Image (cartoon, rainbow, N blue to C red; front, side, top):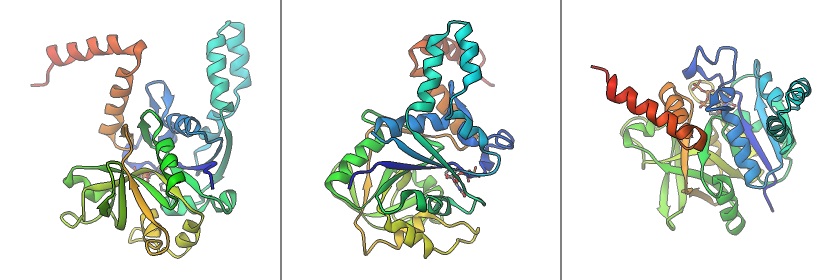
Length: 292
Ligand code: UTP
């Protein structure tokens, strides 16, 4: 069955980026000149998905506004003959059908995904984290969907991370099948330092069969009261084949101060309109004002 819908959880509190996220969703923070979540939405659309459910929460209304038409703004731009920007704004609102549901309490990523149950009903679907940007051609999700068509099951994007960082991720164990495919036989959420079964981390893209909802129902909250998606996947190990997919491309996690800043710089350097001037600035900055 084809993947037609994607769920984008964006209801977290974004505490690592406070105070910037006090009254503004982390997913709406700008990366160069667009909110982080717009990159995620563009990846979904580039992968052929036109039905997007965004999981929001309190104080996250700007997410809905961003993916809506801005008629007043368009009239203003029309008066200035800025047709290019009008087209850009309309494309944001009209590229897909957007649906929104609120996670009433931020009880973890697994709980956020379970909020999608009624919208998804009985089909396989994608989950794309709203604070993880993947830059690749073809889009990372399209690569995973292509694999899923040949090998249905649960597909999780995986990436090698430094051993010192394994305690920040869900980590898989299993066997390599090919350059891009890893057969998962177990997975553990945020293993304590020194106990990770590998350095292959689950990163923000997933494909699930609808059975994940029933597994989420059976998943107990962890010590912090959060329902972890990794724990629900683990419950399906003996029922559904689980594959880690090493996508081609690069991932940018914008969730910490440093990664937010470096993502901005790197993606700005990839932009032809900004590359040269930014590089001159960075070279001068480093050459002339290197901290002592
Ligand atoms: P994170 O753990 O990176 O986001 O969740 P967070 O909890 O907002 O951030 P910190 O740790 O407090 O800084 C990954 C994704 O899952 C969503 C987040 O919005 C983010 O896109 N999420 C997380 C939810 O939708 N609901 C939750 O209860 C938790």
